[in-house]
Image (cartoon, rainbow, N blue to C red):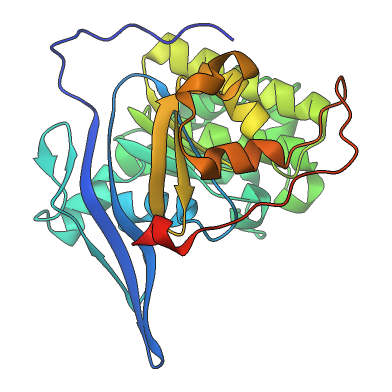
Length: 292
C-alpha cells in the first residue's frame, strides 16, 4: 500500500475524541457500549480492531450522531476540525454527515434503496450537498463509478441493487459516500463479505482515494492481519474500551516487544499461521480487571 499524504505537524487534527461514552439505558440496567475512548485522527488510516461487541461500530455511529434510542452519547470533547460536535444542533450535524464525514456500513448492499437504481442514489447523494443539475449529478456519478473501478459505469448506473454483485455493491456504496468529497471516511467492515480477490481490489480503491485526496480513514475490522498491512495506526478495543494504541506494523512478530497488552497478544495467538502451523490454537483468556 502507498503511504498517506503527509500532514503538517502543526495542522489541526481532522477529528478529536476525548472520553467518548455510549450507554444504553435498558429496563434491566445500563449497557456500556463504549467506555471512555480517546483518540485523534489526522490524514491517515486508523484501524479499530476487536471482537464482536467491542464497541467498534458504535464508535463510528456516535461520531455521526447515529446512535438510536435509548442510546446516550457523551464525551469530554468531540470535535471535527475544531468544531464542537457535542454543542452543534441537529441540523448542522446532518449537514456535516456525508459532506464532511461519511460512513460505509457493514453489508452496504442492504443499505441501498431496493426500488431505486444505484445511479439515482449516488446522484442524490451529490445533489443533497451541492447545487447541481440532474445532468451534472449524473456525470459526476458516472465519474465516481469509474473511480471505484466499475466497468461499464453507464450500464451499472441504471441497475437496481439486487442486480449487482456483492463486490460491486460495495464499490457502489463507496462511490456514494465519496462523491460529496468528505474529509473523513469511516469504513465499517467494508470487506468482510467479499472474497479475497475482490477484498484486495476494494482496499486498493480506498488506499488510492485516501492517498490522493489526503483524507482521514477510520477502518473498522476484526481482521488483525488485514489491519496490520493496510493501516498506519491501530486501536485495540475490548468491551467498549481501548486496550492499547500502537503503530499497525507492530502487530507483526517483529513488533512483539511493543505489544504490551495481554488482550492484543491473546487475539494474535488465536490466529492460525500457514507458514508455522500450530498443534492447537490458543484460547483467549479475558480478565475482568481490563474493564475496571
